Image (tube, rainbow, N blue to C red; front, side, top):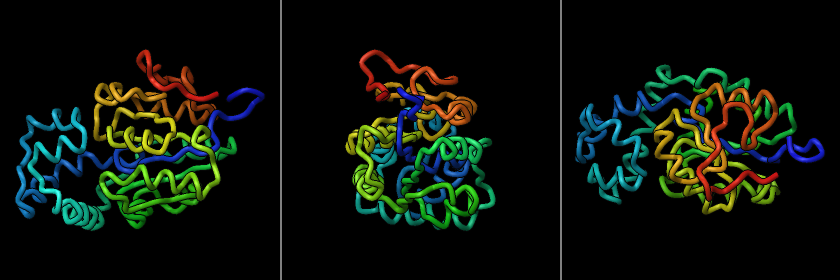
Length: 237
């Protein structure tokens, strides 16, 4: 907790895919089918670790995806996920983690480029009911604007908000919105790749996030949180 028992953040916003939902294995299994339909470069098994080290922009360039195809590819992926939703589950402990924060009086948000229906199908009504503010369907590079809108809607200043995500573009979105970023290393980008973005917090396993949330504390040094590299943006107290 922060000074005088106050939680370090009033609003914690979560990404969905790769942060709350274990969807990366499904994404890899579907990527080449999507590539065949929209005529961009396929990915070999040996390239999969490389993808986890790259930003979304670099991945698109690597796969030679034309910019005009992005909305079509994103829509196709969301549709395929809806058809295959039973294969995707939340990471163990997600509901307990969100309950821990909510019980501490922290307001929760969800910002994702996925659809609300897919988020509801994976997380369930009980978990989704804990989340006050939800922004779905954001474009690949449009999360920063969505985060700003969520701050206005919740009437929370930027220095009292935290965005939790698993991708380099999540760090970029948090920077655009002027809020702190907590990286999780079990999703689409590796922990090492995310460390280079200078997050305020870095969780290398789900257990670390669950422990911090159960302790009602998201701040540097709590639970198994890894301290960021020198010069990284620190968590406000």
